[in-house]
Image 1 (spheres, one colour):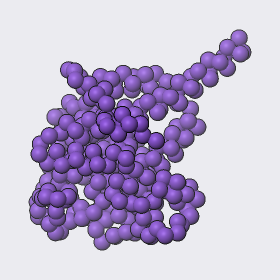
Image 2 (image 1 turned 90 degrees about the vertical axis):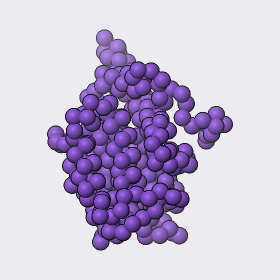
Image 3 (image 1 turned 180 degrees about the vertical axis):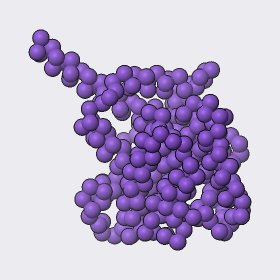
Image 4 (image 1 turned 30 degrees about the vertical axis):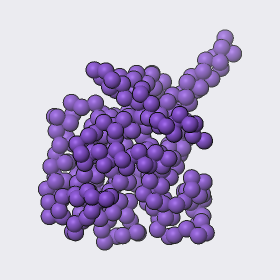
Length: 277
């Protein structure tokens, strides 16, 4: 349950340090996590299972899926249909898990992220839901939210080509991985290249960038949906600080969760070794 302080300010000041390097605290956490690597395969498998469920539930819930966390778990783990829920909601869960698996495979490949990769992720997000538009750029104009007009449909292929080029540019390469992930997430949502599934795809792309750089996935929470949507409205006004703060906070939260298990494992190893001496 949220505390009152979390409701008042879900993103505390240390989520984005006001310093020369705003990601210094995150870098310190990652350095500490790296010191425990490689983690035991059983722990890695457990963490993936936990994060896959958390990521799938929250990313779908942000987009309006009404399956609860527990119902999402039942669908993923047991393949059971939940009464009173739509087929689409079930498929969104299954598709998102498959998209995560693809992202994990891509993260292991020593190559740049290509435009085709983004489309491949989206094709799984909409698989069996809207196969005619899965992995294909929209052909019609859209309005996002109350008043945001993304680029017109004929502009989308060129915008996406330029976006993919930027992802692999020297400019992007000089950015901190978290900053690069934030900007990629933002830009994909600004272009809004697909008729549906843009939010899920943007968050999957964001985490592909993070995972390739050795970070755990950042899971934007459904309980912060209002703040997240408000932050994306600010992006349309060229104010990137709120969304950067949200994503940075979630990266920190994920690192903390990984470190908790890693430290317990290391402590257990020390105790075991002491018992042998």
